[in-house]
Image (cartoon, rainbow, N blue to C red; front, side, top):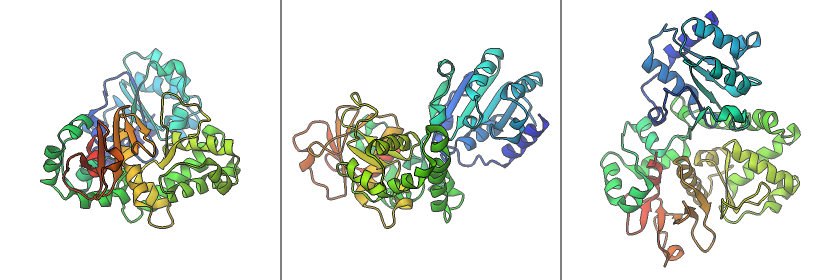
Length: 401
């Protein structure tokens, strides 16, 4: 245990609490068992360490932070560690990257059932195996999903601009007041252009120069390591998966043609369909359907977007299509804030939100033809600071969380 505590002290002493994500206040840290899910690089480890630093003094042995891929667990089990920790007076156990420990769900369940006064916080970069954990354990565990930084969080991290989050209902009903409150503190359009290219992942603020390389490392790790390990992706196909992502990054966001993707990647159509689902599970793409209530595993998506706009800039050979960038941003922020997002269709609008809100995404000069005569329909327009009739600044949809 000494080795784990020494590493714990070093990690907690080193972490900064000057920039803390809003997720900190959304988690009920008093829960007996919770898990923080999210893609690699969104800041789960940092959040756990920051909570400890804000609530415990260095050297307090009632709390322990450790990573499941520590060499300590080559000769000890999670259960061994928990036994020793509780005997030393431990009460709050944080286990990072728990998915890297084989059989983690069974042992966590035993720890949970044995030690009634122990609070357990888990996290893992891979959404894949975490979603495959023990069903009995999942009933005991409170899950949280940690998305990429919102545009609102980016403003705070990058420019120390603090603005309140706004609900979608309030933004659609009273956009003038909210947009004016943000405009009073910064130039949102200028900041938004920067965010689209870099700022979705918190490590942007550690080293901006190497940020594209780090984003590409996230993609490569997911495809080369996680997909073969947790979704039985053929290692020989990982290069084709990267080629598939590369093609999607170049695409204009129109109707999807699976046959063309199949030919371009030299993979059979069913294989392409399976891999698209895997890429969505690992938070690299977003598949859109016209009706989420009636879909099957092998159903062709109506549209595919990369998970966030930064991925487009990193994976594209040239400057990505701005229409694709805008739609990727909008879809990412709405889903991350808990809304149901469906493909609107060529004659309806780009997106259908929560079943009855139509949103068309475009530039400042986007006309109303697409939503003409439709109730509860809006335009999310780039390059504008203030709303005009039913045209709302696109950047404002990045302030929902």
